Image (cartoon, rainbow, N blue to C red; front, side):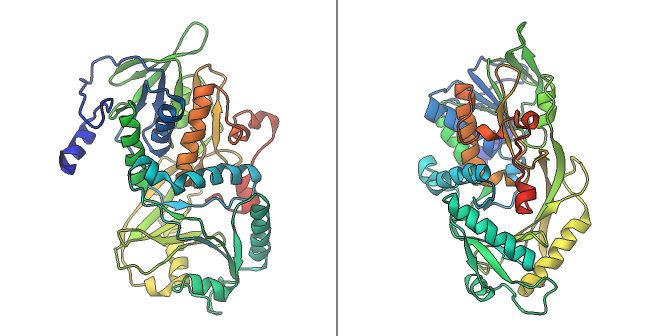
Length: 418
């Protein structure tokens, strides 16, 4: 089958129980019973299904997606991977994911284009320098690599970077995680989808959830969809941007707010930018994709919205900053821009948790940190669903922390949640 006919199959919807062969179901036909149903066919949902099948031998799993796999936030991110978070709980979570990234292409037998080219976070004032030093020491104590670079060393590591003294925000140094880098977002979704399908997981696209059924005791008994009803005793909800909507169908209210997060890419050019550069102070970051585009990310909009565009002034301010940091890119033209929808929890850290509804589990609240956590999130969420208990790494990220007050406020601690 050529890649174009395969793309047509994916757009029309199929179940991947027998490899990538098309196993058709009419939209009105009832669907079979499954041990686990994962709501959301993005990177995290597909990774969860894969690890359920591979590590826990739970293969009667269905991933249901209202659109197409990888068509949500997985296809709308800036591909950055790093684990140099400040809080020990966050560092543990993201470093677990980082270790999985290193061998992911080989494990999935699919090139996810993981490139450990280094992530450099700039310091522009005395406060930035002090925060960066604190960050570096905390990471080293946690066993996570991070190091300080002088302006000259930052320039040597990233030659296009402007370190001149006439900048509005001069570069006083940088923190560098050499293991950090990028991967290709849609390749990650495709790799997990193919590997999960080969293990017996059904991937059902163009299938929106309309309700979560519960039995007389209040436990999950099934999922109602636009293509029929599915009987199951366990449901994992991993629907970035719309998790609250799905969880509300079971009467579960989540402490989440949804915001547009903007990014853009330039026209493609030959290799010109060797690493990832981030600036918390001016809230901009840039890297170059394998296709040659400059991938530029901005911050979240200041207002709650499901818009996938966002305010123009956010992107404009980011581009002004990027053009000052990397002047040679001023003449590049923008190819496209977009806004993803990110769920933010009160402490700006993720929620990987069972809920008070027996058989219902939730994976959400990643904000801007979701992509880099993809394999680790799926791995830990699969453990939580399979054992009805969290893994020690994700135990601090339960819903219960909002009752106990044991928050993991990474945004306040590190000044940025990216």
